[in-house]
Image (cartoon, rainbow, N blue to C red; front, top):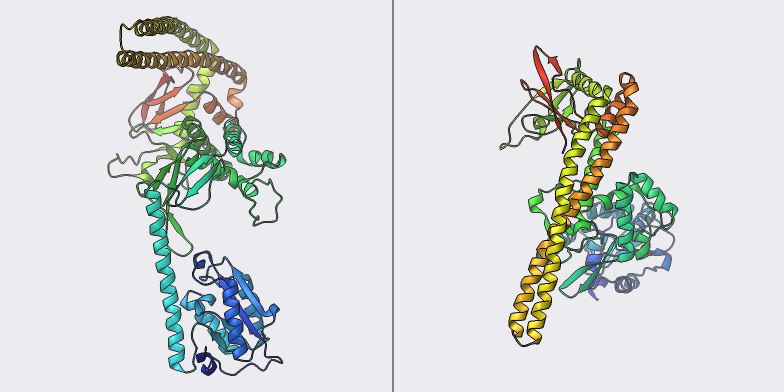
Length: 547
């Protein structure tokens, strides 16, 4: 430590503050753990250096920042010390190493300039900072080396994380609610936390039942359901009570593919200090984890989220009849979106903005009044005559009754085959008991029977699913008929929101392409002889019932 006695700190003129009070600054971040940078070690070394230079450092002049990176100057303790520097209330600043102040050379120079402007010396335990150009140069070189070491550490950490994910293990970061991570040296795995998973399943169910994200957050907060932060015992960033759910937290759960068994990493790329860009999905790294939500339910939620976004008032500046993919390009099948100009509202094909070299480039467009008016008139004519709808429903009912009869016969045949397999299995058991066959033959026979039984059970499940779907379709058709009768009397007074509601209820899809008939699909039969003029050409309207 003798070199510290002869060192001349960087300063212009020592502060003339009343007492020779020095200030110690210590900092440790997560990446510094285990590198000899513990807070007590830093303070002890700085206190010894302060005494050698004749400075007294009371507890009130020891400034500590824990768990904060050295790349930012926005640190609570550092801010308080800089305030003392600005008022020249201290006589010296003592640190273990320059990188405790900052690991970025530019920010380190900002701090040293403030010290020199106030005439306050900077003392470093790791090496003496001598006066003169050589001393300043060496000090700056130390800062550059510290910045280089940090970048190398970040690069090694990133490579290690990606390598761990490539091996199928968790690559770090937060654990989604519904899971807990069991960590062991060089490995680990996810397990479902049933208590938390029940909350996740409930959130998905509430959303599918029609509740919006804000309503879900309000309901969970009202019931004081603990969040992930509450369960971990972590301090909240904002002063909110435990069990407080935000809309963003619900949105994060509903959009996370982790709940169907896919945890993704390497999704974003830093393009600047404050901006990130989403990588192509082919660059993502994925590990498999236990699923909490069925894929069909997750897909239904994503479909509903997309529709809600398309129909949201904040995403619309003009009134259009067709939203959420109701109008599609007859050439490529992509949705057509509203595209207003100064004189008229238009619909244009999505390929105008999402064109791929391997896809047809449509550039198709149609004036909104020319497509909305004729289509709505055709729908209104169908809704005005419920007898057409009733006749179609009766025809479908007869067709489905025949189909249900065939499915019932198939179900009975499967039941008979399963019963026959049970008897066959009993016969082979008896043959083995009487020493007619050995254990190897018995296992082979049982394996064959098990395989045939599984195939029959799969067929039986498919038949039952089809029969249930028919019953649901029948109930849906009755609801459609009820809706048509209810809306019939006010067809010509419906405003745009109620017209869109009708398209939604009847599951109407419209396909348009220049020079071709307008094609409409949906849940009601529309008069196929209806026609209209778009531009200077006549277009017929063809209709197809939705399966």
